[in-house]
Image 1: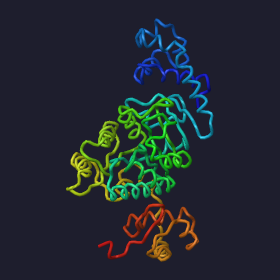
Image 2 (image 1 turned 180 degrees about the vertical axis):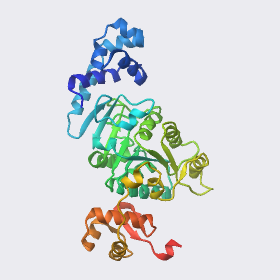
Image 3 (image 1 turned 135 degrees about the vertical axis):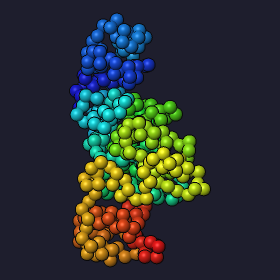
Image 4 (image 1 turned 60 degrees about the horizontal axis):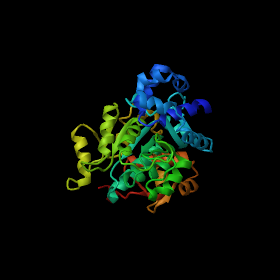
Length: 363
């Protein structure tokens, strides 16, 4: 991580009104690291970013904001990662407009993990919520980190499903990282801060401004190898994320639905445009470069699968209970459950529970 003086210089650049990421990159290209930018003559700065921005840049008006951010960063579980840090996500360096810095709560290492973005409607159907949670859980169990935007609906369902797997999840905010939005996701926000990661490029205290949410979408897609849209209307913001993913060279996936549902039309449009149709987590894993081998757990022996099915029975059951019944470790049980889920023999339920699917249900 950057030392305090260096980090303070990075923060000052991001707090200058009217400068923005493009202006900051021009300054870095012209003068070098932020400490050298701030040491440059005003006339030289003005030639690069204009007189007004140069004046703001050399004033002390951002001091309070810088000090507040530095105080925030030293708290346990908090970090500020800049473009110059080794912890900066390498996939974000590939996009046209990478954030200059990221405020992070939780597990910073997840930012560099093998990730898939799962997005969709805020007003999702019950089936859409179930699909998002099930797919996210299966992918996370296979070691894939789920990236989403902490919105109501599909985003929240994906985060909850992913928290139960070893891949966990990253939430990218359209507000300051100290702002819990929407308020109804407060409990999920707390869970993400302890078991996953929360990320924002916006300064502390930034309120939920409508224009910031489409902007954060480039980070959601940029952190991931691909974007999976679960449910979306034709005017959904999720389609913006899918478009950005295509522009960034990422894969685009979509879950089909009823031809009569408005929330399926966005996904159907993506499929018509070439998105991969997804019916199971394996459809995603098979398309990620290298992920099918790196993230998919070893297949369990048939006798192990049959034994776990017997221990599961037909009533809902969680992993801990199955470990107690079978004598297997949680990692082995999770791997077998994922395999059985991909084979259509087990269904994932809310609350980290699993249920055997009867032969009749599979017809």
